[in-house]
Length: 273
Image 1 (tube, helix red, strand yellow):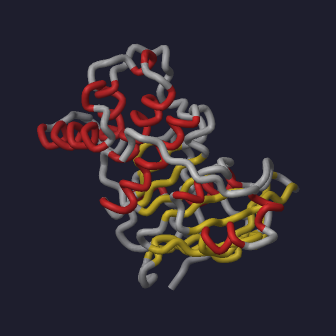
Image 2 (cartoon, rainbow, N blue to C red; image 1 turned 90 degrees about the vertical axis):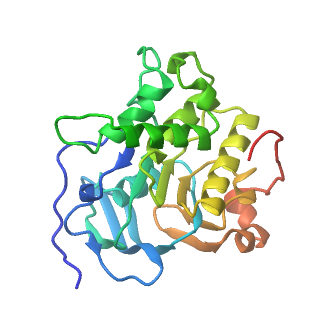
């Protein structure tokens, strides 16, 4: 049975792996067939202003979902509601049992590029965020960190200062931090906005690799109408209300889709997954 009581964490979460207990108590976790998340009648307000109205959808295990919409359509608000950072004014968000969440916020401010941290230290912080005092890195943690660096193809950058890296490399570091605790659900809010086209394609390719080969469910907010259609299976198009939720291919092929999303351009860059 689902609870209508919702309590919310007082601390804002800055990014990286999200502890499962960060989800508010009223976020139901129970049998949901193959869905990792079910959203039912979600409404979110900032004061008297209603940002999202009566949003309902589900995210099955293994999906690659793109969240799109114009500026001010509520995309970031939706993501913050999904990870428990913004309280709903109405409706309910249900999470399946055993959901482990990795979260990459719109602005990865949890690492100041001027701070003299190495790539390895940033990824280590993704392990320590879940630990109670004393916070220590174990040998097993070191192995997981090394495996994650290798998976994201930044093993050779481990001892470099983050501030010395390119934008694309920095985003791989932030993604590694979110992935180091083996989440089965990865939520990203406009992670490619500051990347050049080739770095953006490589980043999308990396996400597709994690989705296909490592069974990580992906939810990504994007303005990139030119290439996300090559990677995402499903699209959720918002404009404060739900406009469309369904297969990406059908959306892009619908005559009315160009009004919302523009033409789908085929890309693809060498040197990625």
